[in-house]
Length: 177
Image 1 (spheres, rainbow, N blue to C red):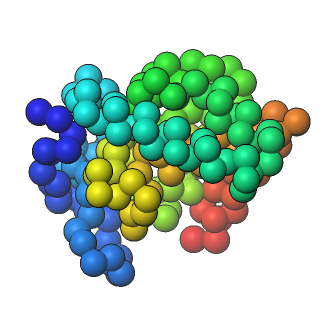
Image 2 (tube, rainbow, N blue to C red):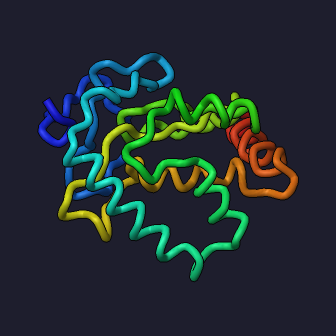
């Protein structure tokens, strides 16, 4: 079964006010206490990998116009153009370079858990990819949004600077409560 056809399961959903016009996506039934899940990498379909490649090419074509060169280079170094990235593979180099790792989450997670992950050098990324009809816009972050955001962990001439700020932001937010 491909990820596109997987029904959203709503066990243990994040609480709070939802301003979205649609239900949360992702399978929340298998979340851990920190809202992480296993990335179901082997279940992505060829159609989903093709959608990722097209979306990646489209986003990368826009990048030089809107992002600094170091950011674009950082995304290219993640080496994710060939298909939906396997977090295990990315974590090998990301961990070595930054001390951060990517963890899979089902979708939106509570703020406290998000900042707890950042404080502990874990960057939460949703495992699902947007639908074909959403290539230009979607309401919540999907893998592409999150993967591009994780490039900030690599985009400084001082490699530890962005990740230090991410980790510190998580720690400050946790202290604020």
